[in-house]
Image (cartoon, rainbow, N blue to C red; front, side, top):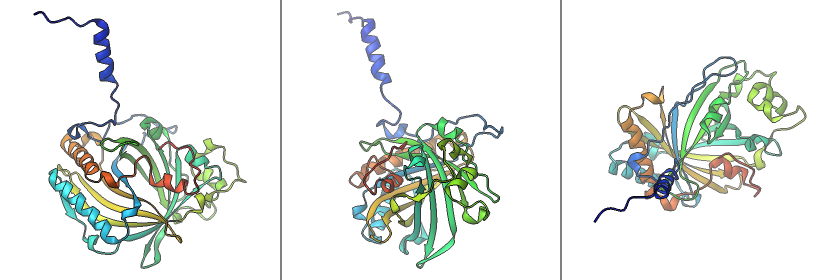
Length: 329
């Protein structure tokens, strides 16, 4: 019996269905590499665009299980077991049996959240040891956006007398509505120690637009104030878990953390993260990119009950008083 020939409309409908699958939808783990290609161009002064040199994969976690340091280690055991099952190397961090690290984090913004509403995040972080601050406060301005071109074109370089470090990351997160997939945010960061800013510059709102030319587009005036977002001072409890080995020399440090408010100790959110650094992503071999994707998807399945979907740590701080601002996250 002769096969029925497909009509043009049937063929077009089949083609349309094939095209409806979006990047980041659920897919076989072997097809996930988490690392898209580069964007090329220059900034206004002719400097070449910063390139993504970090892959940071995150799982945002419900905070209720993190009631002791043992819960951190229990999660680490799941990470280790998942790595072993997927053929990923894992070496435990020597601090895994020690006390967690403590860091204090505050976010700054205008009263109307103009920075965050325009994809900027301003953060100060201080590390504590045995109850006392060590080192100097670290200032970070980041522009985080799902569009890589937008993140790349945003020149976050500051005008300061001292030194700074630029970090451009591709951040993988689960899908907002279900586990088993991923989405990418591009985080273009500038960070420096507070001592790198001269005393004459300061960090008030008027000076910020001078330090960070990227903020001028927000029409910030000298009489506006930068406030601590929702009066929330965050205490981060972080435990290094170890190092993942995806092969071909691609190593990733991983850790698990809990964010809670200082004073009330209200638990906000947990996070597992691993990070890979590279010179050029085009030079990263396909196998480790694939192995990172396999591990990331597999771990999502193993800890599905732990996952807090559709949020980020920063978003939880901005939601502290119930009024969620606009977001590009």
